[in-house]
Image 1 (cartoon, one colour):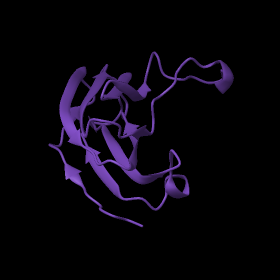
Image 2: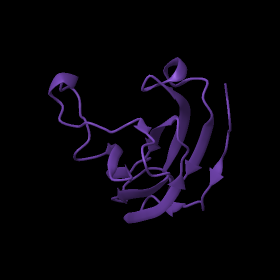
Image 3: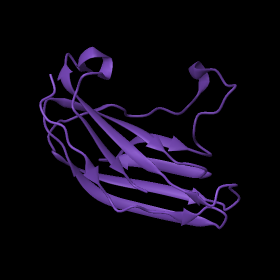
Length: 139
């Protein structure tokens, strides 16, 4: 059952993707116990992007990201995703994005979608479906 659904709007960030651009966005998200939080990131045409939540790498793109055709068994990239709520209910979040300025589109955006699901036996109910959902888009 959905206990609570929220959408958190953050300032929109639009940048000229034909020019070099980099940004570090920081903040704090409030979470509730008895939920698992899953993070899905979108970095657009950035050459490097990553998100840390409460010190955990939850997603990334670029140099250290997983690349094919290497089979999953030998990739060194692991993400702490989803995250359970342990002691702290205020998690620091940091998003870093670097764009080299050679995109074909005039503007680009990036963001993070946060989905929460009730924690049952250490896994989201229904494989992550059916839980409350919130979105925090950064751009």
